[in-house]
View 1 (cartoon, helix red, strand yellow):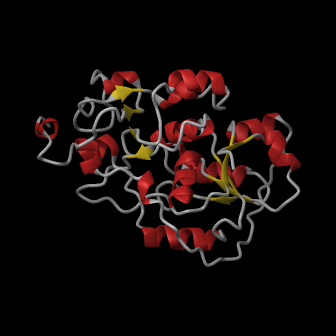
View 2 (cartoon, helix red, strand yellow):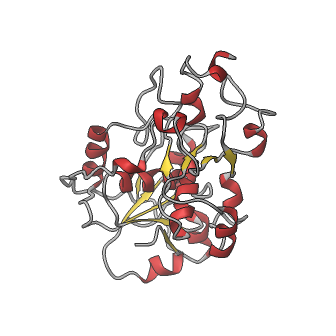
Length: 272
């Protein structure tokens, strides 16, 4: 199953689809839930980055720690996902970055029947899609995980990355260069990383760029590559784009830069 689905194709589907709304605003964490309450795709449940897609903060793990296998199993069971039996479509209105996080988590847990709505909520509205305020009742399922451990890169994998594997920083260029760091206490990037900002993979309308453009931007990327960002959220767009471009499924360093700088054995972390 391709990782993206267009509004037109979603509207044409004749089979049941579980829709999940992932809208979110880093500057106003409650805003996504408010927007969901104002209107969402019919049948969609709200999934919060803070409450559902992250674990509690610890010393390590980054600003948006990946939930445990147990926590993800509980979440997907509560949402009514039966592994590879339920067709899941996830969306946001922020270029796909939060939806891509949920897409990645489901894939990591072995659920392949999941897609991101290309262009998100805005594309749905623009194309005349129905919007509702009704909150659906969910019938819980017994989700059974089949963890795809190869999708996740550890700190050790990042440190010991052999050539020709690529380490790709998916943050904005000014953060990669250390010229502007609005969030983390240390500026810069992991030594040996290349910069491929996730926003360059997304058009002005919030849709992923055409395949030809993606392939040019992601030259050299394959399943051995490691993607990271500030905290393991926006890098999921790069992983999704590589999969959409048939380049393989790169690994994700989920802790990202905000995890890297918490380890004292990293010389750059001691600079902070």
